[in-house]
Length: 263
Image 1 (cartoon, rainbow, N blue to C red):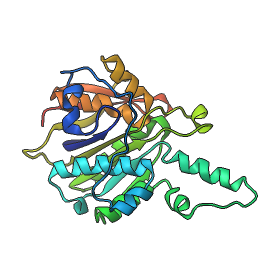
Image 2: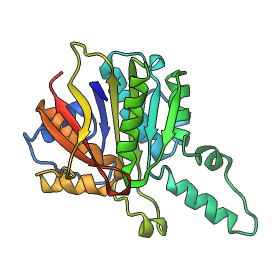
Image 3: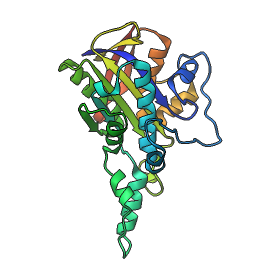
Image 4: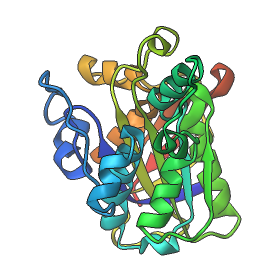
């Protein structure tokens, strides 16, 4: 299965969007994340009231999706979507679980509204008026590969282009002890069946023996710090415009290759 990358969207510590992050991803400069904290992104498709109510995971996902779709030149309404998150919004899970353990068992309606795993896909569909199909999936640390495979399958089944969004956020204590996601990360790709003058790369699924690690040790730490960041080696290959095989870890420790070449 193969596809063309039409655009990329991104949000991570020190990597606020695709264009600003290119010099880091292509190796021209070392990765440097700020220690001053990470301000949540503010996706412009969401009205101010919705931005205030939306959880961090939704803000991340929609920011990356906006970044990619605006660069792709394809209308959001024409794109079916695949949203992949290993754990979604665990802060809300923690608040609801804590509330249910209290005598009053008072659950916030807003938390209940945002607790479902497909909340980000729902917000995107409403805000972007994206009425095509939306798939939401989770596969623990293999979510990146599972979402890629689902996107390729949609293209193979006849879709002209697909929006793929990967995102995860750090959980609160005590969930962090069992699921130590360290930083918030979101990545979006617009993939198409046919190339265009705007295509960034050609990608196809292949075999690989080992998981690709990044030579920049600080960027490698980011790759390991969040399941959505496992796609960083693919982004780096796209940013470099190189032809190479990227190995990504899938479910059960399997390695899936993505062959990157010029469009």
